Image 1: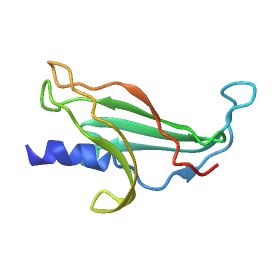
Image 2: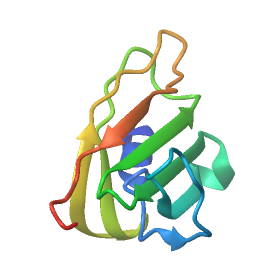
Image 3: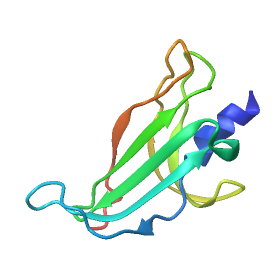
Image 4: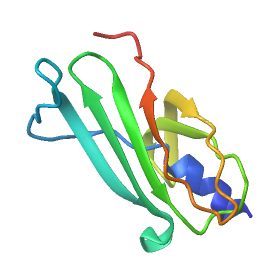
Amino acid sequence: MRCAREIATCVALVAAVLAPPTTLAASVRVESAWTGSVGASGANGRATVRAFDTGAGSVVLALERLAPSTGYAVAIHRGICGSLGTRIVSVGTPKTSASGTLAPSRPAPSTGSG
């Protein structure tokens, strides 16, 4: 199903929107965060990307109505879902459950700047 495969690509989230800093631990702060819908009108769930002042980040996915027991490549790209730009980082290839849901929390690798 091409649409479902494109969902993973659309989780190739766009540039993060600046958000007020939130303390996670004594010295780690969120520098920016982005949350958005996945799929047409959010039919497949939500994705959240956070960038920390340490240079690390996280991607949290809460997805449903995907093909069961299927791996989806997750990457962060510049641009928008309809016009993806350069890949910034690959996050991994999580596999959906037998019921077609996906709810992993994965740290995003540092891009080496910072």
